[in-house]
Length: 522
Ligand code: BG6
Image 1 (cartoon, rainbow, N blue to C red):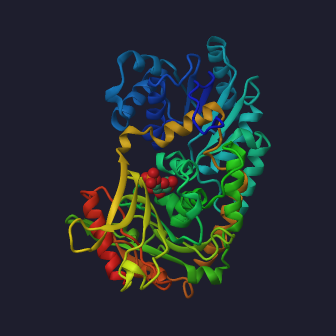
Image 2 (image 1 turned 60 degrees about the vertical axis):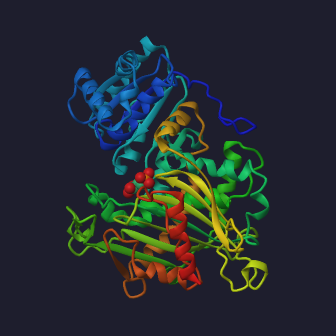
Image 3 (image 1 turned 90 degrees about the horizontal axis):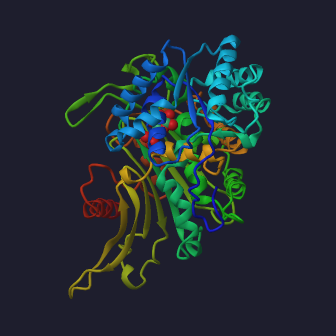
């Protein structure tokens, strides 16, 4: 829950049985089990909480616990965990081999859950679907058919992305799930909403009086949101080939960041009030027809390239990618939120795989000082920037103009900066798990958000079917994307600001990079 003054209340969640589908999969091994152990170590898991891990493979309890331990050693911060916590944590875990097509297996799962709950004394159930999306709907229905959803306590469903492939399939899935769970019981994950600095946007905006008066089209020239990755498609080609960057990143993470930046102050810091304001942003987001999308959205695909002397394959040379694939691995777009606060302010977004740096960053660019006024005689003053760094560094940076110390009167950009090492913040999955266990859905996606996001994305996906009007642009692996993405933003007289990456040694050098670009822009 979020209390009235906006502070988190750190109550331990109720005891419950977590029924985790996809427990032998990659997400569970890399993120979910490490997150659970860290929550247990922080005393955020009630004594009666048990985990029933569901997978296809034939583990028994002991061998599965050994697997979990190995996965956490590989992917978690297990070094910090005391031995008795490990023992307590592993003893919570049970394993139930299941064929998700078999109702008999669901009945056995129900028997196991009942038996465990007789001893643990809880009847609350948290179902977590970390599995291939085609199973989401059928699993929901089988849970009901086997009586698993009627244990007598609360029940909640946590569901991973993707929630549908387009609006029609998302609607179908939602209809199926709503036969079993109420909207308040469904927690749709967007892990970006669990990130420290994405959650911090709300605090920065609504806990600082300096921002609200300038948070609008009178003061802000444009907003730029970059989420660049250095990895390629890796092992996920069968999914990614059908998703592409549009469905994989834009429909969810990029739109969520736009909503957090653009939303109106909610009437109270309460879940539904916050989500209502976010939804209004999507309602105001200009929806492009396929023809308009061709002008405002650029798509790209990576070619072979090299980073640090290491050569990288092009997308179509990746394992299990079709040699003639037209799937986009990069998107840049110019979006508009057509309301009084934001009319006329472009929201530029770009995201892609195999780019030069791993970085997620939001730049708010303020309007230029009037030309010829005071220190801006030749129009050479750089704009003020507010940069929210989401990843890999967490923090914020404000660029101002100030006098260079000394007597020559030169005006130079200076940085006000705060940053924190990201290893001090809990992982996104720790926060989101904890919220779901507590029943707080503020940082989960409500159905109307999902629905509107798909309605926005569908015509763009449709535009991508037409090569003549929406051509696929190519970029070298390890670069900043295709030239068409630079042309898109340059057309409006703007330019992408360089992002802060892991390899950027200091704020000073960052500033230097930004300055060099600022000069080039003039
Ligand atoms: C996931 C996408 O939702 O987000 C991946 O499916 C992507 O393709 C990932 O790599 C990026 O997340 P993060 O937290 O590393 O920025």
